[in-house]
Length: 110
Image (cartoon, rainbow, N blue to C red):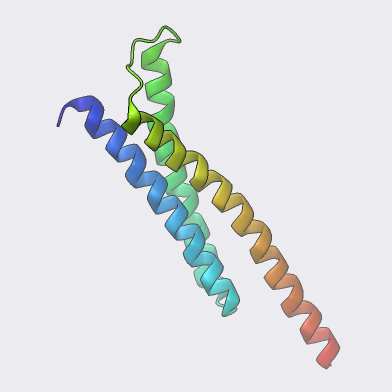
């Protein structure tokens, strides 16, 4: 595999980890395991930061001049990153709702 393919695969791996960790956080929120939720969200953020660093380096190397060829794997990598970012944002909102429902449930039973 050449350097560009390796770089793009790393972007896909980090983006996939970010999405997976976000979804794990949501699953743990359903069980009210808030400590695990926070750890999974932090892992998702860290993986997304790593993917974003790679994306930024690719954009910088391209210099807006088309120096980097855009192929299907590059588009796929970008899709993974954007989906991971959207997933994390939505998961955060859903986790907030889970916490809110739990708090409302506590106040109604007391």
